[in-house]
Image (cartoon, rainbow, N blue to C red; front, side, top):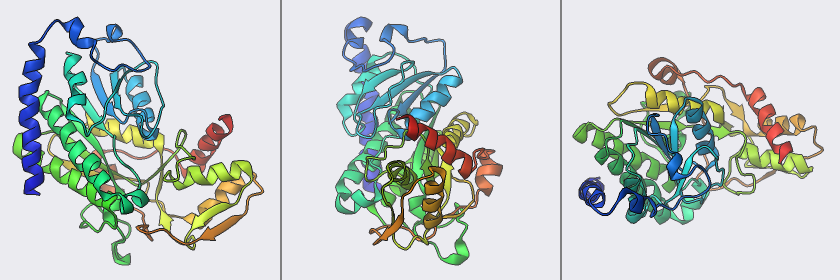
Length: 359
């Protein structure tokens, strides 16, 4: 842990020095031309009188819904994304192409010469299965890359950072510890889980050392529109729906008795903004979930029914790193953060079906 913190401090020093250097060089217009602006509003249209938020990974599944939630609250939104996990461009945002692992890519944010008030950090490598064979990728992106984002935010006066963590850090807790509470120790079963746990520890250390205002949200199983069914590492609901839509077999990995706590993506977006604007500064973490447990086998049959599909539900061997039982106790989410999910699974499945059929 000390090595990670020392590396982060080096990043911090770099950004503190670099941010002053870049502002001394050339005119504002010259600096702005260096930004790799993608689809969206031009730099000249940025409204500096609006509260501003930077969303890393804002082109992805969850990120695109967070962007919409922020826009609905009159935020000026900046997206920082390398397009590795999505291409959900929004015409009302300023979109920058950047990789959180690459220090030089952060120059674009300095060059904007706009105060970023809030950061939502969603950019990450996101597959449990992939992490089992490519652990270095998860270290570079989810630990080292996240540290760069946090120290950039700390050194540039950001008011609060909310980062996406994961229920994977709980692993397979014993039956007497389910539903899962945030006080449980780390029991992750994959490099992905470990990377999210270490990301949290960096946030916690920065909060103690520098007064860094930050919150980690441990997402349970997120589903909804724009979740890419063609990505083999995508959420199980989108994969099931893609098969049901075309009448193919809906394949459940394992015996289907594994359970999950499914939460609709719009609820995730609302929870993120609640944490962002809640006025808390000291580091804390929350499970974002519904507290309702669903067997994966039952879910598969429900999806087939919702689609009125002729698909059969079949089973194949479970994959390494998968968790048997995952459902959370939402008490802290509801009573400390003050957030209660609004969308029931059946309603969320209907909304998601409508999106699938529109594609």
